[in-house]
Image (cartoon, rainbow, N blue to C red; front, side, top):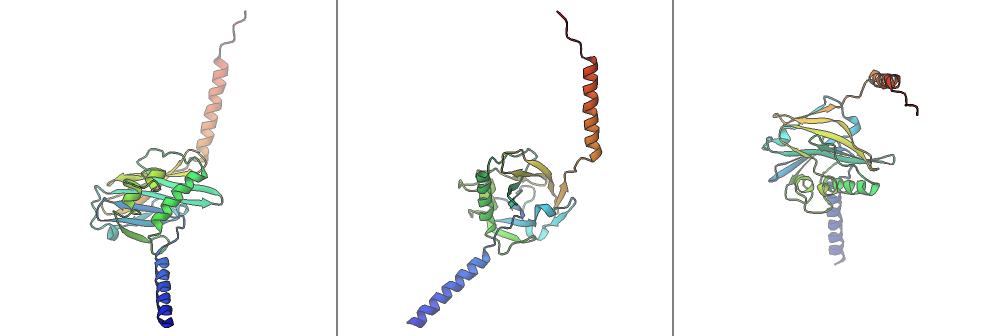
Length: 230
């Protein structure tokens, strides 16, 4: 009897270990997801946002076979606590997303992303996940048609664009500040995703702006009418 009990216990522990191994711990990477709202969704780990290079491409042909790219919903999400700075990344059709008012609000985004990522078998850039679009942690249910208050679109917004187009990637900090544009991702008919970083202004641009403002101030003062004397 004791042998049977021990065998059952060991088997249970072994199964628990397998299940634990299948659940990856979210590492702050940027995720791109695709759904046609039926069949399976694809979620792909693009790696760290900090490692993105302008002109970088990802060929997802093998993973997106069978998807109608003209009608697919797709977008990007991610978040990380960077030395106490609670940051989240999300895509839009070009409109600046809402600010994240507090660390608590950022925490809700983090919870939703982690719920998606736990379905990965392993963490890291290049990992992918195929999941039934009816699952609570599918891309469809988290971002397009959420039914739970804890799902991504209900705690921050729908990050998706539709079809062969571009999605603007924004970075937001959980302190209420306005999100900033990092760049754009474009999807083409060959299932290739391309990142283009938003160019930073050249140092000379700031000098020109500053010089122009100073010149405007000089002319304003020069041609300002003197106050009439009573």
